[in-house]
Amino acid sequence: MISIPKSTLVLAVLTVASPVLLPLPAKAANFDFGSTAVETLNYLSANLEGRSVGTQKEAETVDYLVEQLKGYDYSPILQPFDYQFRGQELTSYNVVAERPGTSGKQILLGAHYDSAPSNSTLDRTNLEGTNDNASGVGVLLELAQRLEAETAHTVTFVFFGAEEIGLVGSEFYASSLSQQDIDDTLLMVNLDSLVVGDKMYFNAGRGAATNPSWFEYRDLALEIAAENGIAAESNPGFNDDYPKGTGCCSDLESFDFLMPVLAAEATNWDIGDKDGYTQTSNPNVPGGATWHDPATDNREFINEVFPGLIEERTRNYTLILDEFIDRVNAKSVPEPMSILGFATALGAAGLMLKRQSDRYD
Ligand SMILES: [Zn+2]
Image (tube, rainbow, N blue to C red):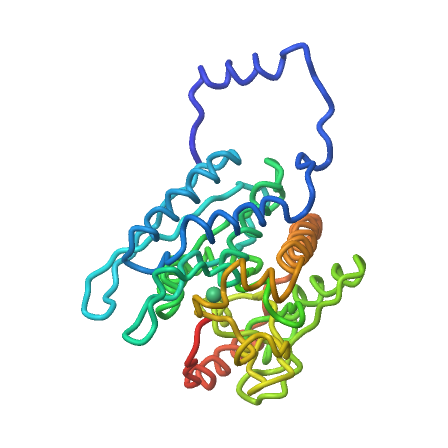
């Protein structure tokens, strides 16, 4: 809690007492859903391609996010973290912005801004990362822009660094949370790769497989989609390594045994190895996936093969999640998890941690 100096209080009173008092609309934002998301996606694709760890473009992306957030009346902070990558000592940053609430509870939303690094066989210095993950960054930024200044629960937006090399930024963020922070966080929402894919998905985290009450937020997102005539579904669970209704392979994994998770992603869980990695049955997409491929994860290719899909998906995800935040803010805080549920979740965590993901979206 910050104490406000008396002089500031006087100024505030004078400001409020100004004679022009217009009623505030319920929603301050008055523009089409998805418009800021598309603008952001275009900017990241065109100007911040190849934003992988340790690059100048990565640093420029951080600056860009900070500037945008300031423009939406946030005071973003940078959370630095050090790590080793291919024998180098590197530092990256999570960009964190929040709208403070009054309930003592928090809604956490995240999307990674980095792109996959080059390796010995593939030069990714021109990887636009339009789908993965300019799309998630764009939608997250628009949700931040749309959020009113007064909110019941604190809403925290985190733009994670260094996801593509093993969820480094999100793991650092999760490890920085105290038990009290975790208890006070209602859920984590992860946005990764929202455009390319035959279908829109909302999944829970793995912890929900043994603690079904954690499916509550997934169900709410699907309900809002249905109310708006938007087709969305959940992982059908055809692959035993990926339990029904749960997502994987992105920053949600840093949180999904700590708290309820809602994971938004476009892909197709019915095809390929049924692990969510094959995104589309469209024959014009080689191998059915664009992830980390400079030749296909770019605006030109996506617009050619899927005309209008960038606009459609960013609009739909923004609309659903904006309403989702409103509804979570409007409802009463759920009861804390029972001791039994917690013990079950811990047991499942122990069992399931042995699964090593060989991919990160
Ligand atoms: Zn990703």
